[in-house]
Length: 147
View (cartoon, rainbow, N blue to C red):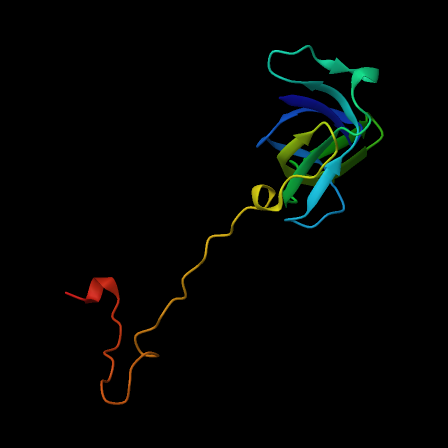
């Protein structure tokens, strides 16, 4: 199943687990965003729903990944024989979104399916900090000096 959504004045073709980069949204990384301007829906083996045939409750849900910036654009203006040169630059603020689900009824996705499970980082244990008074720890040497 895929859908065509409108965000930031542009149309995007999306499917589940797609990563899209759109214009900046006012959401923090990790937030779930809802796209309610669904222009087209297509399911496997069925005719596409376009325009008025799209249900009013159709929604596309996504999770904000991060807020990158676009490439730097250089705007250079010159008027010949007038010694008039102006240089401006611009970088567009963007939002990267991972599409979580496409819903015909407008129901949000299940919490466990939409939210990624963060990898548990194991704490770094220092040999000096874990030494007990009766067994002193040896100072850690650099790998090149352990020979």
